[in-house]
Length: 208
Image (cartoon, rainbow, N blue to C red; front, side, top):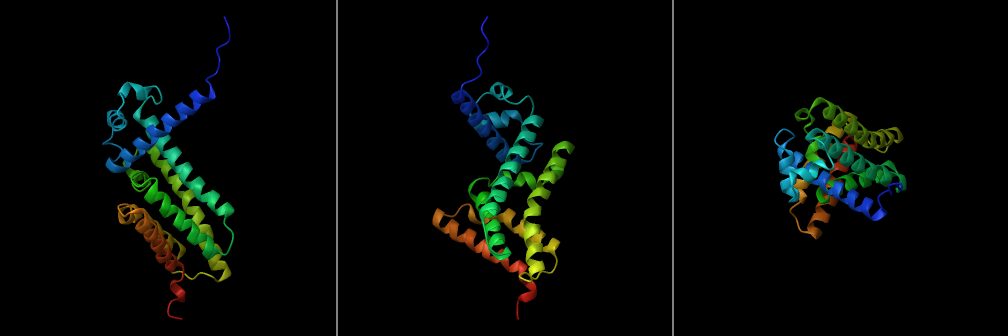
């Protein structure tokens, strides 16, 4: 009997694309309805497939939820990390670029799924802890730039924690504010959100 051939690259790409479609649909549903209110039947219905076909990729809702968290969290944060790697300039320039990219991703790519990370208490403990870890990794990118700007005298804030809380709260609402706008107006709105949030790192300099 001959050796079993590994799947071709085409088959692997097709499988990878299908998994991404499932994860995206699941993330959207978890974000829209909350973890407890979503079943595999709901995910199958969103994708217009049978529930049985999902079991080919994921054995349970918990496994699917964990994969959605890992994939979305890693992909989103990796995009921000890569942006910073290729962006030069002062803390001001890099922080604005970071805020702009985060809001752009939230509005254009993951408007519903963003809520996955806003309400971790609704998730089972294992996933809840992973959400917290991913949020800390994400938060560290913004924190490092704010602290760098403070050290150089470029920024002046009430407190780093308060600024970060305000930034994240505003960025989490950006899909609601900007998502229904036509493309041209949406881009302008994202610019305005980024500019407005940059004022948070100049609180101590206002009125000088």
